[in-house]
Length: 285
Image 1 (cartoon, rainbow, N blue to C red):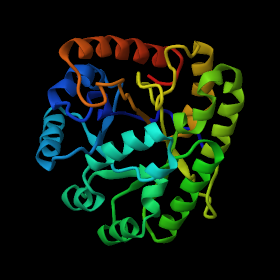
Image 2: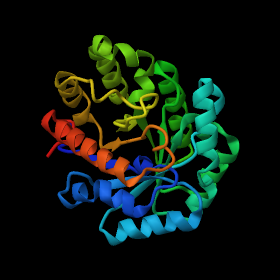
Image 3: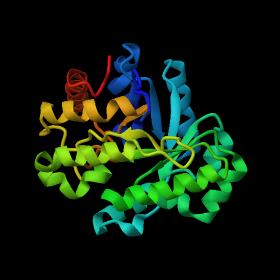
């Protein structure tokens, strides 16, 4: 596979939480679109539909491309008790895939492997002939990757434009407290999955989720990761993917909403992280 000059860089709307507004998102991120650091948005498709429409319209009016939705994840029963509670609530607040595909056929759709396993969702995807779906690993390490690969192959066999989205935190979650010790091995494993191809020679995982948020049970501990760790990741992974999505979930209550003071702190933190990602080569200029 030939290496790419520069992947697409997206940021998720998870940084403004369930009750966040389009203006809050612009406050946090607009400058990074204006200077071409970021190329688009992955919207967490929270209800109600009217608010989602307003968010999409506002972003488009500010020349910010909406490239993908993050739908329901499924697989709540596979998580720890706290994860099960949080994700059950969040999934109840996300618009169903059928509605998203009908209302916004031009926008790509992402979810986790357990969601795409459901027969009703499969039939919905086939019926609507989704523009493109991204299938994300749900469980840690090899199990999550294998589940995603299985679904990617099934959808490709059914003539659906399907690609894998390898979530870095989901893969390394079991090593979150010893990440520095295990990082070189984990990056090597991640690279081996990124370079995997299907029976037709087509790359399976074309994108990565790189979570940089302050909610550390679903984010990389970016604040304590060394520049050397980031450089290694940049060298081994970034040239081999076409899309990088920065997720940015915030600690409670940020997962629901943020005050102006919290948003100001998050903006400072975001700027510091983006600068580090540029310096270490994860964001190619």
